[in-house]
Amino acid sequence: MKSSTATAAPVTDLTHEGVQEISNTLRQLLADVYALYLKTKNFHWHMTGRHFRDYHLLLDEQAAQIYEMTDAIAERTRKIGGTTLRSIGDISRHQRLKDNNKEAIPPVDMLSELCGDNRMLTRYLRSAHEVCAQHHDFATTSLIEVWIDETERRAWFLVEASRET
Image 1 (cartoon, one colour):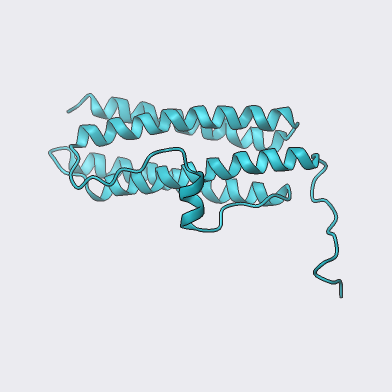
Image 2: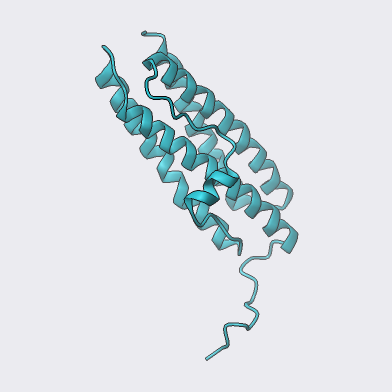
């Protein structure tokens, strides 16, 4: 049996610097995705108004899609030999998207805020894509390309839904 202090063989052919930079980028991205997931669920739980049912279902669907990203981001980080988030505190230290703790928010403001957050997440995804491409991590870039498309679609739906109010 090998000692726990034995050096493990590299998991990837990416450089050590590449693994570090990609892992740090994905850690921040994961924190933002968790923040957006929780905000989307918060607004889903606290939705009111005449379009309650439609918005409630839309946000539930979007939250599920956002949550699906979390495991893929964390597992990709681990596959290349990096470390990922470990706690709620870790999320709060790394997230860039802002929380919303207000008691009451008009539905149109909820949709608008989520749209802005999804647009910001798209920017973060594009930036992460650049980092991964610089280090020739094409497996991660291909995942990110799908997430960019999904995130742009969520923003589009939120814009269109907010036109009804």
